[in-house]
Length: 283
Image 1: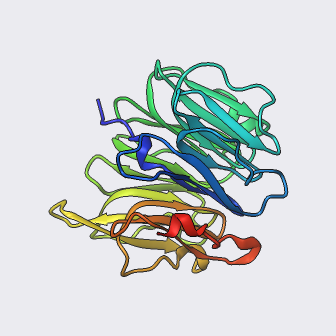
Image 2: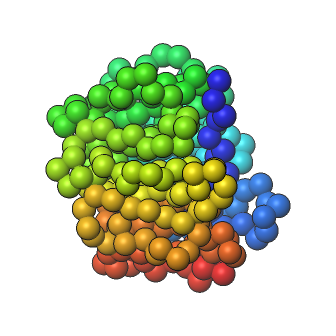
Image 3: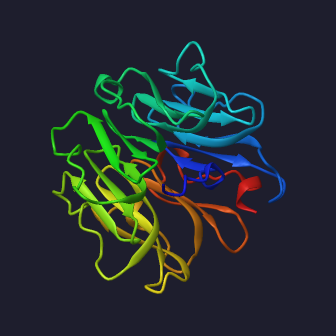
């Protein structure tokens, strides 16, 4: 059985044109309130009050895991009723979201039929929603994807065990293997499925046509600088001299939580205030 994804390590999320993060007053806090910035044309950047422990952003909606382990969503396309049950993790794609329940099963909701259909049975530790497709990671480290397959985004490499996966808002996905390598599959016309060789990684995040990952050394000592590949654009212009504990990519911008001071930092396309991190989060 693989080590489950720590939901406390997903406290910042970049969507298509907005981002959200959980604000806590100290490292000892279990949860905090959600703050969002960027485009708010569907209400996706207007979170409800309360205490949350994980957040995930889509195109025009956002979902977050409350401290009582229920899920709350807001914005255009958010469910009128809360998803039923207690959850361990939530992920939002373009127009749908999915969550891992306490019993390790998966529940999905929204309007993207491809990403909602044929959700697999079994036990899972992580789910990642992309554009009209979804990927999930089983307790045994097996990645499974379902939904739209126009560019081979469901064709997970065989005989590969993963620690973490990321389904993109484009048509590809990447994952960190049990050996801390990265494997990607699906659309590769901007070489977004060709991560640099000779590196080891702890976490990967995908954008529409690119990806970035947090490095470790080959001896698996902490490095925490970021490496990017794929389309040369704002989202892959992550600062090279900054170490990050967390990393998240949106459509054409990215954000992370710095190791040095726990502050949030974003880069890439500045339109629609995507990089305007609230001062209270910048530290």
